[in-house]
Length: 162
Image (tube, rainbow, N blue to C red; front, side, top):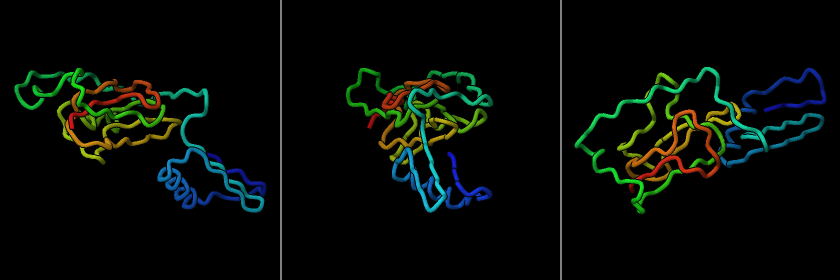
């Protein structure tokens, strides 16, 4: 994000900047350019064409979690061949993170129930960490990416049994 002013000595109005960014998120805008007199604001979200996301240096993928055999609900999770599964896809290019921080547990695991607004992961793009809601209801049947993997727009991330 950048603020450009022709008049030197102008200061940021952080509250206006925050509101503008929230409106961009709400309306899924990637770029906004505003001008009033000699003042110009230009905000851009997401990756520029040809740019690749970088994993933050402080973020380390958690070690793989052991999977204990179970006769519980996880045993009834369908296989990949089940054609009735819904797919949660990446809404943006970025880096996939399964949890809010390396110390925290994953948002979801195979067998977890999710609703339309359940946060299933974070996708980081240009140092912006976007929480991704499931937008479907059901049970997580399969996680298709690993923590720290780069993902593309529209790439399947999860399979969900409705």
